[in-house]
Amino acid sequence: MSQPPSQPPQGGFGAPQDQPSTGGAGASPDPRSQGGFGPPQGTPQGAPQGAPQDPRPQGTPPPPAQPPQAPAPQNTPPPQPGYGYPQQPGPYTQQGPYGQPQQPGPYGQPGPYGYPQQPGYGYPAQTPYPGAPGAPGAPGVPQPGGSGGGSKNPFKGKPALVVAAAVAGLLVVGGTVWAVTGGGGDKKPVARHSPSAGPSVSASASDAPVNPGDGSGDGGQENDDLNAGRKPGEAKVLWYKTAPDAPGSGADAPGMWITGKTAVKAAYKQLFAFDVGDGKPTWPALTFPQKICAATPQKTADDKIVIAYYSGSTSSAKCNQLQEIDLNTGAKGWSGKVADGTLFDSTISVDLSITGKTLTVGRSMSGTGYDVGSGRKLWDKRKYGAGCYPAGFAGGPKLLAVSACGAGTDTEHDEVQELDPATGKARWTTKIPKGWRVAHAYSVDPVVLSLTNDAQKKTNITALKADGTMRSQLKSDDGFAPECGFAILDRDLTGCFGTASDAGTLYLPTEAKSGPNAIVAFDLATGKEKWRVKSPADAAMLPMRTDGTHLIAYVEASYDGGGRVVSIPTGGGSHTPVKLLQNPEGTANIEAGFYSKAVAYVDGRFYISTTRLTGNDQAKEKLMLAYGK
Image (cartoon, helix red, strand yellow):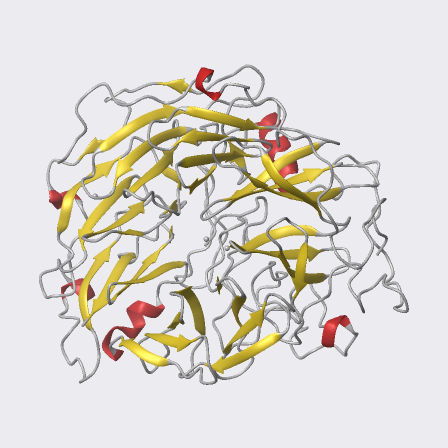
């Protein structure tokens, strides 16, 4: 693969490239002068980090046929079989140690649905990054044929999200694209508060889904006592919720937020709050005028989130209506409308994230930061440098921006920046060599990126130092299988479930070729494997988070047993999983039915919920399930 001009030597990214010090042209020198979103004009009501989302408004064509019950978004490949089944071929060839060629592995045959596997789901072994010792293009290593090259076609090689944004801007279609707030041109967010157009509070808790699982439901499985026949040592089903009815085209059910007393879940047009212990509503459900299209995965230190919903129900509706919500009380804070940007930079879909006190709203070709507490606009992140358009943002402990640069030129490439969340200015900039694309951020602190090269059908996982220079590249013969969904037209940078990290280690699940899989711990200083531990059951084990001395992992339900939560010591010589919670066998079929899922283990309770509603009228869809002792 040919290297871009001025590629830094020594096999790494090299020092950060020279970039404008502001990190984005067009930012106001005095953020206080910018517009923003204001608080509501009345008394608030009440006194509460790759599944794919479908941002299409109601009335657009339904998704293609899917495997039974599998909730997949529109125009995307059907979901892969679960662990233990042959995987579909990924777009990355099987590599040997540190990138040396091997014979194709046993998983190179076409999958059962005929779709290529998406990046981030069932990776083959690692490929070293261009310039790394032993990598293609390094001294003494044969150069692979074909690098993708430049093109006179302005969209050839350009990330699909930008192409989609352009098509959306011209045709006003309802496709999934990246979207960001913040006013291209002279447009600014428009503060507003309209009780008639904003979310309404349900008159009573009866508007929430039924509360089955204890024999008090409304028939069928929902009326079963899910704890009947529970075996010694198995956890209890604390509560189980079914989903509200969704249209046949499906609907999003993004996010899941747990506070000290409340579990909050979005679904279709509603936001529900359940008591963590018994599942009873802690505040009346909030109903929005249109479908919810985005939500902040993170919550603030004082338990606030921001929801986005559509401006209407037609195919030209925008995902541009924002509402802040208090998770503990259900009170509505500020609300506002996201302004459209320049041509091709629309709000057909947006991406939301929180970093500290800053809400970042991402659009297809720009982004904007707001004070999450007041809705006041702080900064814009727009085109900068040599045609670099911000195309994705990753929030959390740090704020990262990924930009597509030089589209249609011989120097087309991605750039990664860490932004100051208060000002939007770039703290560092790292240029990714031509041909490689940032697909996911497995971690934002420390920064660990999953990179793909479609032309060479390769993948790479790279860790960066605090200044953005290369720290290491993972070296492994394994294929890895975090659940990153099937986003095709946008960069869902933090949309992977099944990865975790601490300051010095990245934890990844291997793909299950036969029998149980394993979790591998990689030293981020060297990229080498430190240790691995096999799943204690004949089911996939996926990292959830670290707590300083232990890795907390979820072992999925299998055909003959419920899932479990385990704790794995990260230090010392022993890494044997210790069971924290064993879910009952009697609900294994319900637990395994959450195909597109979010999970959490908080204060000894395990929560699992769907992130996508299919709109299937033949069966009551699952929304959320909680276990505890």
